[in-house]
Length: 414
Image (cartoon, rainbow, N blue to C red; front, side, top):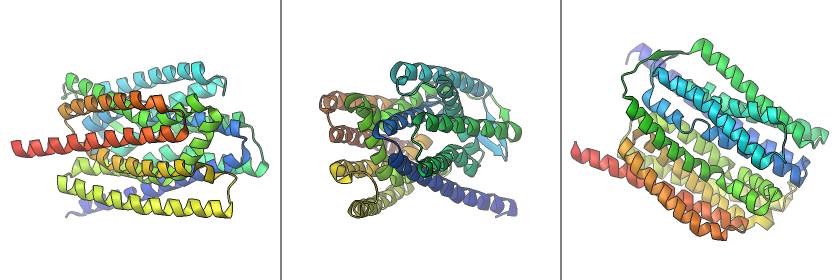
């Protein structure tokens, strides 16, 4: 092994582990911030805060309509700070960012303006959130994993600082809190954008057929649409069916119970997609899935013990006992979501357009059937969680089956 190759591998190793540390810091910051804010904000205010943060999170996941997967799939790392891509990709990104920000703003004003009415803060945050997803993937493709995760998690660290201030001063103005959080998101995106513009160069190529990339965009759009619904649809349904206070309680429980799973889920999706893209085999895929299942079981036990201890010692001002079955269901949901991340990372790295098309058709069909059936029973918190457990499980099994089927067919043809 040459010295330059060894140095590159060492750099990537350090980057990957430091990036995981940033993910942990971001996740813990968000968890602690929500615990403190739940202590200082009244139920309605915490519900409004939960709603706005959820809305911003949806825009982040959905911000490029799945085009970030096209960018990752068809762009290449040439050398440090040089990415080979298609020039049209950048134009698509700018058009999508502006379009999705405008649509998100209109939807927010229509549905939630009565909760939070700072139009400029929402508008700028929508633009910043959508564009930051592109910058995240630019850093990711450039093997700058730490910068990518700093971009994704720095606002959570800022949120913790704000939460500590609000808690110490017993200041419960939710509008001020949201103004500062949304401003932080915008500023972080601007800084990341300036760093990218100054440091990273794009080398353009047009060797890929436009029909293929556009077809990929359509199917990744469908895929990311179903993912967005699964990640955040339960919270919006809770708000619509049970009110903003119930959503605040559910948001709080999700952050406490699902936070450890979400940390690992983010890391798996972030790291394994690139690794599976570079080095994949069915044996490695199955082995990794078994490891994920084992960690899920261990993590579930730890979460259960911690929540029981917190309840017995009365450490937090929340009636955990009243939500005991919801907590059990959320632990099950967390396990399925973590397993899903391991399957999806391989699927996104190795799926063909033909398989993606078939998978989207199956996922949409199954999701619609399950939603039609369970929407009749979405009249309590637990029924909503059960419905989304089945949605996540069904989607994950479809992705796993279609990926393995493709790999086996390809091996047979080879």
